Image: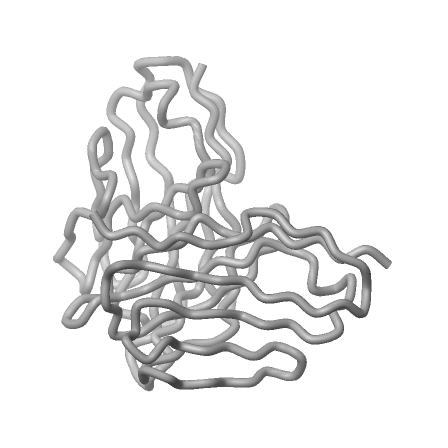
Length: 114
Length: 111
């Protein structure tokens, strides 16, 4: 099992450009998440999806859109990138049974917006 | 807005010392998790606590959930260089699986 995979690993954009961050999981989890991590601020939830076909806003959704393409894939789109969106982006999926509620994270996408 | 504050933000200690990291909030959480993150990687779950007053031990790590389920602590006994990393707490409120993450504690253990 690959777990949670993210592409690309690194990206540099100019202000106003658009891009889509891809995420896929092979653990058959229903729930998937997108976070951003900035220095000194931990992880902040952008969007999450409790199941295929549903999405919900997190703490910092402005400037982003998401798409839960199927059970495996959850993509994050920046329509018009801004320097404030420079960050490390993590995708995660959550185990749906038991008490642990463990989230499994991908390796991250490091995005710089100039 | 829910907040999870961690303290200290940074900690540099010698191998063999003990340390405690705190995670505090004014909100009540149905569950609280601790993760460790190494540079260039995503966080990895260490433990989940769900009952007020619960104590869990994972080798040299001891986790406690406050009685009121608003705070938690992580205690490391005899720290080793391999414990170096960013420690994050994350809480979820009842009826939701949206997690609020703390600001993180960056630990460095010197050999």
